[in-house]
Length: 212
Image 1 (cartoon, helix red, strand yellow):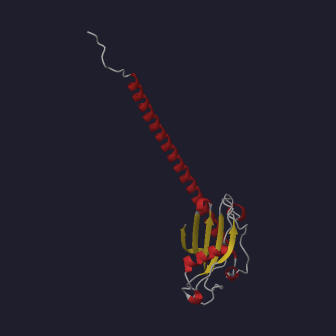
Image 2 (cartoon, rainbow, N blue to C red):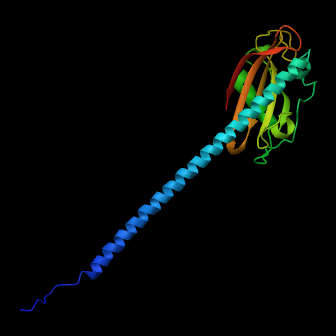
Image 3 (spheres, one colour):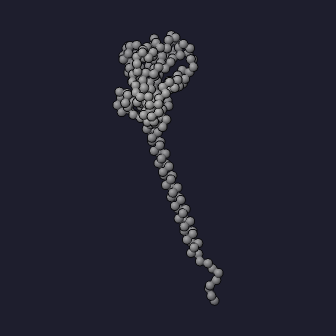
């Protein structure tokens, strides 16, 4: 009896199965590789964002400390409130990391709105006065600060004075606000109420807060 019959060779079918299996393995490996790259990119971005946050935070705090040290040197804070004393530090009006121009008027108006609202205390509503601006690493007398961020420093009278004159300090208390802008829209704000500690040359923080 002949064993020949209507049977077909499985060679081509086996080859197709092998190719399909190899393709599945390749796709799986590609997926794993893309996943690793994605995780790596996310980690790199997170690290960069963290670095940017630390830089702008350090810049804002350095500007605030400079303002406090300047207050300690001055017997009269009125000239700073009125703008008669000039700027404590200054630089070009551009964020170094992006080249974007600084809109000082808009930032001052934003700070005014956030902190003091719309004339909440009438004639005693404090008004922010810009007393410093620039690149921390270039324009602040502090080593190790960022050259990629930009910082602005304001001063205002405090709300508890009640003398109807926001351009003159009569109770030995003012408010300082420093805001730093950096890469990838990083931002840090620190603000402190500063008061004299009884004698000229000694000041202390009465209140403090920070944010982004």
